[in-house]
Image (tube, rainbow, N blue to C red; front, side):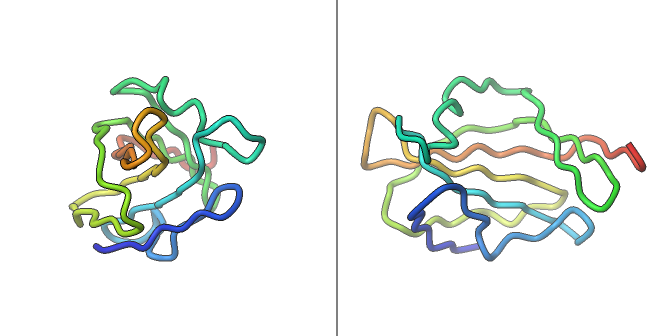
Length: 115
């Protein structure tokens, strides 16, 4: 899946996102990671594999686990693989290398109805 990323402010839900009620969903969010007040992803670099993320959607709590962290060239376009299952993808700039973006890939491990 090819995405065009241009975050001008705050956090952006990428239009190619699909939600957990859809087959092979992927909620894709992008935000800045610098030091300004709009850098909502500034602490993503502290995450470790197996960290959990929670999404609350339509009275269901979805639990995701961080399965991969990788870097891609910062060109404005990103190709994300289409995978079986349900995912959340977080995208931000690399704090040390301004020519790279960091991708955090979470896979759904559980859901809880009427949490």
